[in-house]
Image (cartoon, rainbow, N blue to C red; front, side, top):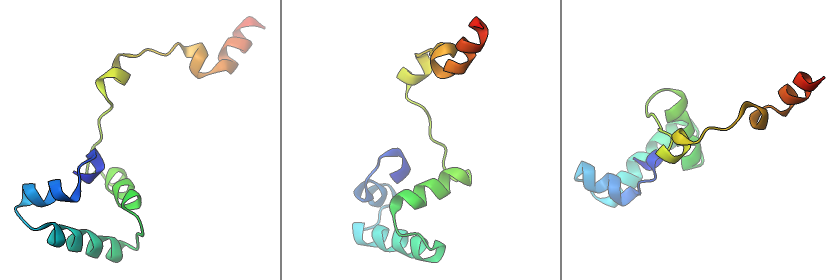
Length: 79
């Protein structure tokens, strides 16, 4: 949930535990993995397929032209 923008309070509510207990569990996991920030923990979870992050619908509907993403393609094509 934290990787999706949820707060520790959100996690605690869903799991029916106190905020302090949720924080303790998160801190214990981070300590065992050697992480110092929640960002490291979220990145680990994404890279190891523990959580899956979806792109916002607005980004999925946006089409970026190939030339905008790879300018070298345009210059090579015009040579």
